[in-house]
Length: 233
Image (cartoon, rainbow, N blue to C red; front, top):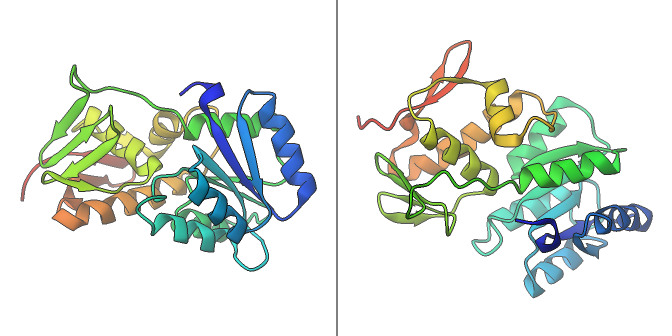
């Protein structure tokens, strides 16, 4: 995805922050739309789905985590990448935002350079598939052209971060990776997140695989990280 193809929806109740982000991202040739609260955001998303949503945590009527859960629970909007923007700094708050379905988390105040880098990292797309764009391991098939995942040949909805994590696992089967290595490979070396972020997304990915009793494909490597092995029980 090139920069001039990226459409961003900024959801924040502070007009000054919305305009600052609009100015910053417009300089990177991104198309920016804004909403002042969750209800307006839902209307604008229904009109046209953005490539990514930048979402404030604290808003009137509908909080950032609540809006995130609503988007994730709707099959039409479930795959839209979401970056949470917040002044909350505790680890529990970060995990709460990630568990709600956010793909990344930026603490206010943030620099324009950091914001652009985070967006680029979340939207990063790789295509390690074969000539037909497909990767298959065990009972899982990924179509990297359409970005669809099939569990036992059944199309399954999966969030963008979980998609990238599964894509990396399936492309590097049987090799153990530490949490820091997974952060570098899946999120990017220019993004600074806590290693616990990996655990949150692995849990979410396992929950998806559990629909077809495939959660055991992701193995925990004690005191290290994770390994993907597509073996049937």
